[in-house]
Image (cartoon, rainbow, N blue to C red; front, side):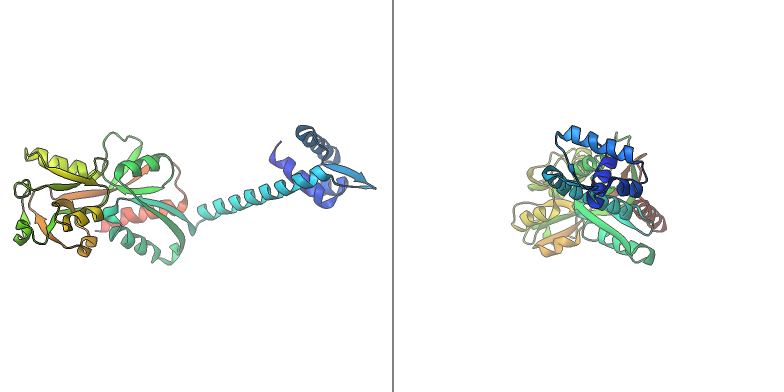
Length: 295
């Protein structure tokens, strides 16, 4: 059974006349008759019965008509949705990013893009996650674009640097280090470290800092998001190295400058190479690239 047969069945059910239905469908009457007969054979039930010069739905035909109408309606809605998503001047962007850029960078870049009247009909769906999860879902087409850390050996993904984040150290307000303006990795090594999980791009950066310093960190707890880390630091359970984030102002912690040559983290825009990007996504991608060049 194919889509044309469903349209043939629906049209015949509405007009109740083979000749009129064939004319409306722009096919021959024998073609219509053969199509309906094939449907009835496949379903194992008669869908129409004669009534004078007309045909009307049987009991089975009426049942089937309910599902055919629903199916065709859903297909039409799907077609309209796809046309809306890829239309020039409109469309949709599926965007995902690390939690650390969700407070300022992402809202600012979306707002800047939508400030252009030509983009006012473009909508966004936004998601958060760690770099490993973001890449996994990007490659499975759940997202169009992501903001993440660089990951090596991802030959099918393009990484474009777009934003640099500073690293800071947060400590409880009554901590011995709280009186300092800046700290080194040697200053913080005696204290329990609240850290990102191993799936996070930031974890690789922090691990590398300790390797370069030839220090073994005392990791107490691991979290995916900076808010949970800041909450535990505020509870006087340790210290943390995080990306500088406005949300930490909501916690009773002291932010210290991190005195290290590697106190920056680059954020990348990533997308799958050689995959079709709808016009809205392509336009947003180019906006980000141009914005990065200008800054």
